[in-house]
Image 1 (cartoon, helix red, strand yellow):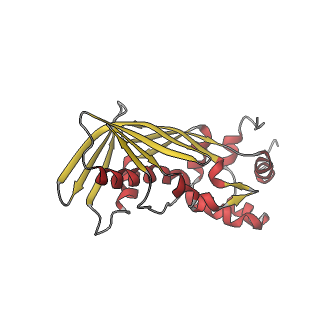
Image 2 (cartoon, helix red, strand yellow):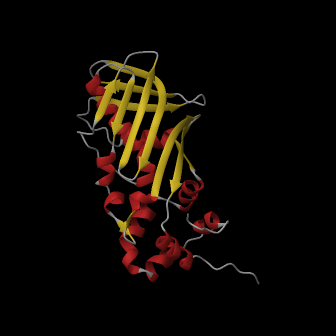
Image 3 (tube, helix red, strand yellow):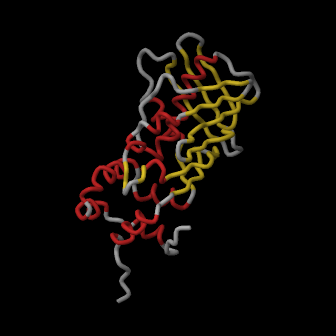
Length: 229
């Protein structure tokens, strides 16, 4: 059990990243990745256990990975307050495909990273197309927590009846977050995602920020001292 001060989340928001990089130069690569991935508000939300990511941000991330030769023109997510995640796919060959369903699981813990989406009201059409689409949806959802991810065309996608399961662990392991160490620990192991729940306008991720004792001690030593005067 890590013994953190009651106000450690507030203190994390006050970290002077430039000061840390100046004082502890060998942490530079890790700190650059952290800075490029999180702002202070994002770090605070992750540490508090809930990170909200808007549909707008997710749709922009997906759009960046749709090229001119892609099988779809666009993929749009629409999160609803009742927990539904609606997906509209505009394809060149068959026109629009509309899906409505729920994110049954969205998990990242160590080397285990996967998403399960359950389609409601219809069977899943065009398995090849769905593999392409859900690969990009799952990576867009993970990107807010772990930074830019490379699209993999061979991401394991399993479709059974109305359930789509995407294993994105390999992509995370090969990302900057997966390859970068901070104090002997992978950055990727410092964050866990327990679930993702669609809300109106975006998705709420339930998260944990795992800070090992040695990392915690270094961060605490670099935090601003409380001024009691």
